[in-house]
Image (tube, rainbow, N blue to C red; front, side):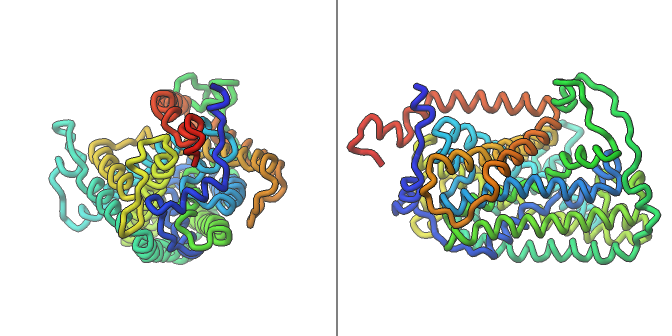
Length: 498
């Protein structure tokens, strides 16, 4: 049985499967398209919200350095993703990479993890988008009935029709084709980045140097906690993350890291890229560098406009402009946030459907979902199924506490990819690698440790929920995937081996 758990699908077979007519995806994306996708999914609520939370509670003005630290952690993982995505240009991202290096069961675990991460992330973002739209509508004097806004507190029931409508509309766009998705994303990302740049440039005129003093506020003691809401590392060894001080910069990095989630989705589009060996590494690294620069600039501006201790944790940029006597910027920022979340939602949904598609093509999920649309060459069946399910989930729940599952899932994927790079370098040194992760195995090891550190700073209850989801995944694998995978069928009938 152990041998079945770790049977691998070689790289050549993974690429060959993508050429089967009924499973083939249309190759239409360029390096620019991938970079736009990356920027589109990374810049979301993080740039508008997390800056205030981390600066006020943990790092002060030094939160700009926290963004740098988080960007470096993501950069380490990005270098590992770039090697795999250029070597194995197949839909599925970390799932496909681990299937080629670690084996079927580890691949199933990471695939199941990505299903949760991306589906839940889509729903959470859709609800956040709905909140910004409601804010804009309220400012304009228009209000939806409470039972259609998800805010029907009187009866404890409501359906967020805007969140559901967004998911369904984006599902339709993704079914029609990747090129249309890329064009829509390009337009929306251009608007979003323009708003961010306006905020940075305009805010620079209201910076007061005194607000940067002290740049690194004195360390404050964090009371010990024993509840499941405490960071796991605190429950394990009694060490509490620091508020302020030099260590506060690193603690804040575990908070603002969540603003970078999504760059790995670029790797899921490798199979639909015209020249994946060249363009995927460029798309991954390019989008990460651009977003890190924008995040650092926003952090410097907002902490210079308003004292860190007075920053809002809900809308720091909008409130900072209000404090300077320019409240109309709040409307502009809300508009930028709403526009930004549109692309985040679409690209997370895109990544989710591609992982599901790859797993069904391998037989680990029903193969009914592995057929592409005869005209659009998109995985329309999993896209429609997931779109409808996520729309319902987004309509009926806020998912506020479950959002952290997205973060632990992403970090777990980072660890798996870094380990996979080292393993595949040793088991398949002959593979052509158009992009090679530097300093292997040292860099992947550092990437694993950095990701694990951030995971340990997540609440214990997040780990508990993640463990429950994994147990459910184990059951699905043993009851279905283990015996229905293409590798299992090949073992039973060698003549029919893929």
